[in-house]
Length: 115
Length: 112
View: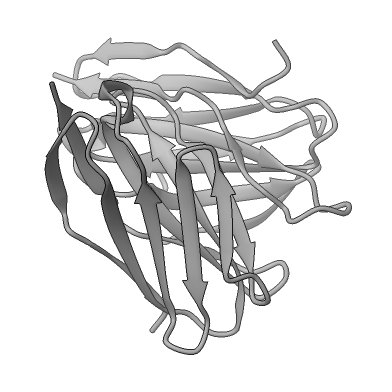
C-alpha cells in the first residue's frame, strides 16, 4: 500500500492523558499536513511541514498540541492533557510541491474519543 | 475573508436519480478547486481538481463545473448508486502554494 497511513485508527482515552498519532505519508511527498475534523464539519487546518520544517501552525494548535517530522518522512501529532473538546478525527495528508497541482492525498484518519 | 460555502447541507435522493451539489467561494487569488468524497469514518478521496481555465471535468459518473467569473462550482452525480452516500467537500486553494480553504461539505444519502 503506497497511500498515506495513520496509526492508530481509533483511540479512546481519559481526560488528562496524553495521546500520540503517527502519519506515514506517500514516500516521495515532501509536504505533510495535519487537519482536525469534527462531526458535520469540513477538515480544519492544524499545521503543515515541508520536509522536516514546520512552516505554518494554526491558532487552533494550542500549546497542548505538538507536531514533529524529525527526518522529513513520518510525522507525529501529540496532544497533552487531553480535554473532551479534543475528541475529533485527526487527518493527515501529503502532497508534492514538485510539479503537478499539489493535490492532497489523505489518510484514513485517527479518531480520538476523550472520556 | 476567504470562504467556501456549500449547499445544500444535506440531501436525500433515490437510487438511480441525478443530483447536483453547489459550491460558492470567495477566495482570492484563486489557484484551483477540488472536490473530495468522504465516506463516513474515512479520509477524503479526491474526485476532481480544476484550474482557472477549466470549465468542466468528468470522473466517471461525477462531473464538476467551474465558473471562475461567478466563483461557483457544481458537482453533478449521474445515475446515483448506494455507494455514493457520503459527504462531498469542496476545497479551494488560494495562490500557487497558498492555503486550502475547506467547505463544510454536503452530506448525500442515496436510498434504495
